[in-house]
Image (tube, rainbow, N blue to C red):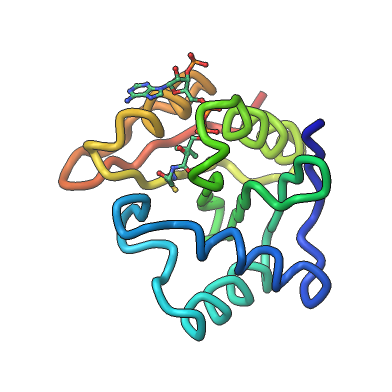
Length: 147
Ligand SMILES: CC(C)(COP(=O)(O)OP(=O)(O)OC[C@H]1O[C@@H](n2cnc3c(N)ncnc32)[C@H](O)[C@@H]1OP(=O)(O)O)[C@@H](O)C(=O)NCCC(=O)NCCS
């Protein structure tokens, strides 16, 4: 069973690093996750300093990480599912979870940036109600948070 819970810093760091080590170069998107352990540690810690940092666990194993970092009236989201556990609905569960959590947060918009060739991510976020705000080499996808 999938459990979604807050990332708890030191206690979870090694398990999260282990998850990210499973990403091969072809699994990375927009240069992320960082491909060396030192940068990975700094990136994870920076993401957990403000906003929201969530883990999904399957039978006690960390299989996904979602971080949402505030920027003014917006909050910017990143989501990574362990490559061996993708296409099992985990990404969609995490998006629904964070949208529910942000409903009364006061932020105006939830933003995610994707590579424009990342059809799966675009599908997942469009299905959750995000719309493509600007188009370039990357897509900025936006979900208004006024319900
Ligand atoms: C994008 C990502 C977060 C999605 O998580 P996931 O757990 O694999 O996704 P889910 O299983 O919840 O949903 C996948 C959906 O995409 C669909 N899909 C799969 N491959 C697809 C493709 N090539 N094109 C379009 N849709 C596709 C599936 O059919 C499913 O949709 P459905 O439920 O309507 O049938 C995950 O693949 C990932 O971590 N990718 C690498 C990092 C990334 O790109 N993050 C997003 C930007 S920060």
